[in-house]
Amino acid sequence: MSFQAYLDAIEVKTGKIPADLVAEAHARGYDVDTKAGVIVQWLKDDYELGRGHAMALVHVIKNGTTIGDKHVNSGTAHSDPSNELRLDGKANRDT
Image (cartoon, rainbow, N blue to C red; front, side):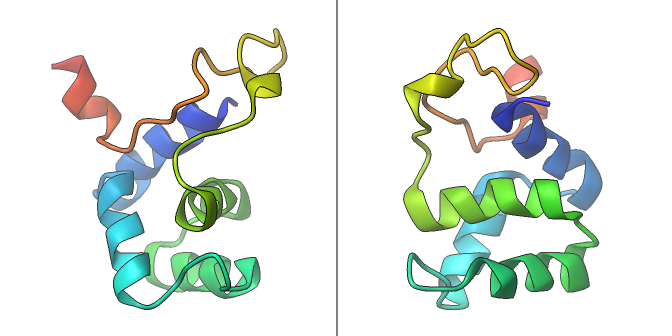
């Protein structure tokens, strides 16, 4: 599953677009210095997200929406078409 696909699936699982969850994380004070396990546990407890989906959000919360070029058009299962992730939700892009 690509990085973007994980983020898009979060909307289906939680009813919230990734941007809303990132904003909620920042409102809780989660940032680059927050341990990943703390964020993963919050997402599990409040939104029943699994580790893979949670770790995709952890990356965005801690590092922003840019991913390394090694993930772009790599031909692997984790390949993304762009190094810039979208947080507006797949439903917003499909309409």
